Image 1 (cartoon, rainbow, N blue to C red):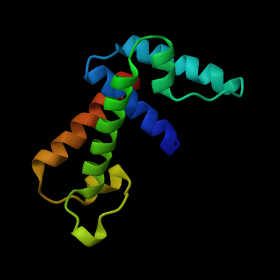
Image 2: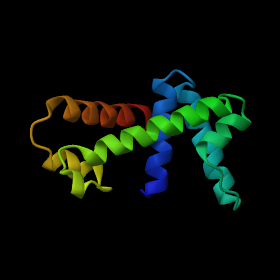
Image 3: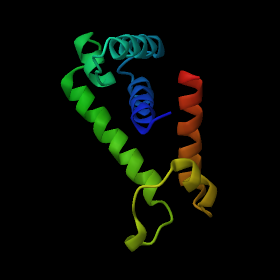
Length: 118
């Protein structure tokens, strides 16, 4: 799975968690995205949801901000300030010592993703 696909899945998961869309609506949007991509017309999931009038631009922007905050949280757990940079979330979970609350949040997000899209 590419990083773009991971981000799109996370975006969909957040939309469901925040109550902006249902799991069924997100899955339908992913199907539309696959069809468009096959036709050579890639669209971001958020733009597909806006076009389908399932979310507003303001909601899309809020989801993107939440996505960014989650990514920052995942990449900055238990790191010295000078070493803070992007890292694979799975590697991060494996190397994180202590910080049960942060690990729990990562695990819940991963389980939510699995439940919603697998």
